[in-house]
Picture 1 (cartoon, rainbow, N blue to C red):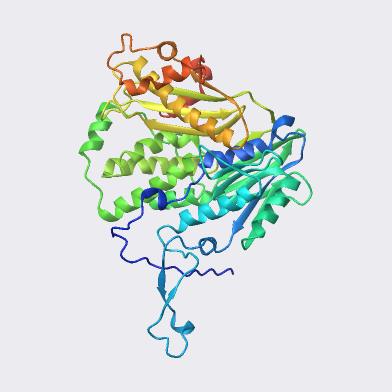
Picture 2 (picture 1 turned 45 degrees about the vertical axis):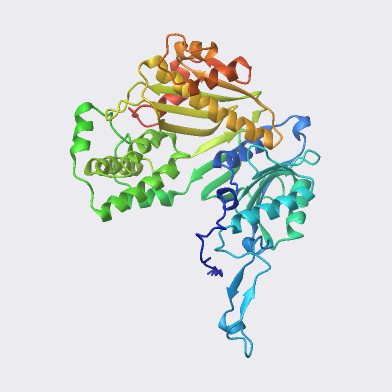
Length: 463
C-alpha cells in the first residue's frame, strides 16, 4: 500500500490592498487535446526537418514536492510545528525561503521556476501556451501539466530532459512509452489508459477513458453495470411536447441535484473520448444550474446506454505527415426546443487522427440555416487557429482547413461584409478576415462525409 502525506498551509488575510492579480494566481495548463497530439505525433511519420528519422518515445516525468521548489515571491511567516520548536521558541514564527502548498501564488511561482530551468536547457517557451516547449536542436516536444512533464522526442532527447529535471528537482520517470527496448506499451495517462501496439505491421496508439466513470454514472441513477441489456442510443430526439414536459417537471431535491451534477461532470469527462455521448451530455449540461426530474430521466437514459456499451476507445494508426489540420463543423438549425438555439458539432483531426470532438449550444440565436452554419464555421475556425498555434509552439507548422456541408455558409465566409445577412453580429466576421488573409481555407464536404454531423443530433443507432 502506498501512503501519501503533504504539508499544506492556509494563507490568512487574502483580501488586502496587496491582493494578487489574476495572472499571479494561476499557472498555464495544456489542453488535453495537446497531450493527445503528442501520441498522434508518436505514430506519424515526421519529415527530417521536424525531427523525423529518429526512434521516438514519450517520457512522463513526475516532480515530487513541486510547490516547495521555487523561492518565495513574497514575505511569508508560518507557525512552527510543536515538534520543530526548540526550548524558549514557543512564541517564535518561521520565515519561509521556499513556497508551500496552500499559498495563493504557489502554482504561478512553480511555473516560473520550471520555465527558467527548461529555458536554460535550450527549450523555447510556447507563445500560445506557456506550458508548451520545443527544442529546435534536439527535437523534444514538451507539455507540462501541473507537476507532470510529457516529453515526445528521440530517446537521447528524453534522456537529456530526465537529466535536466533531475539536476534541480526530486523526480521520477513514471513511464516511457514507445516501441523500442526499455519502453512500456501500456500506461495510465491523466486517467486514461494508453496502449501501444502493432496491427498489420503498422503502429497504433489506443486511448481509452477510465471505465470507473461509467460505473459511477450507472450507480448514481440506482442501477448496476451487470451486463444486463441497456438501450442502443444515449437519448431520443427532443420534441416540443418533451421540452414542455421537461420545463414543467419538478425540481430535484438537494441530494439528487448533487448526484445529478456529479454524474454529468463524469459524463462530460467521458465525452472527451466518446463522441457518441457528446450531444447527450450537452443537453444534460443545460440542467446543471436547476436540475429537474426531466433531466434526471435523461441521465437515466444515458446510463442505460452506457450499460449497453460501457467501453469505447479510439485509435491513432500510423500515418504520413499531414499538410494541414482539418476541422469538420456542422449545425442543426434551432434544434433546442426550449430557446431555439442551434448546436455546433466540431471534430478536429490531424490526418486520420481525431484530436477533439465537441457538441456545444451556440451563444446566439441564428435566424436561418445559413446563419447557424456560419456560426459553426466561426467556432471551428477559432478552435482550429488555437490548435494550429499550439502545434507551432511544439515546432509543427501545418495549414488549417475548415470543412462544412453548407454551401451558403462557405460562400458567406469567403466574401467580405454582411451582404443580406445584416443581422449577423460583426464580431463573427473575423472568419472573413482570416479567410481573406489565407490563414484559413474553407472547403465544402458532402453531408455523408461530414463526421461532425453525429455531434448535432440524437443518435439513431449505436456506432
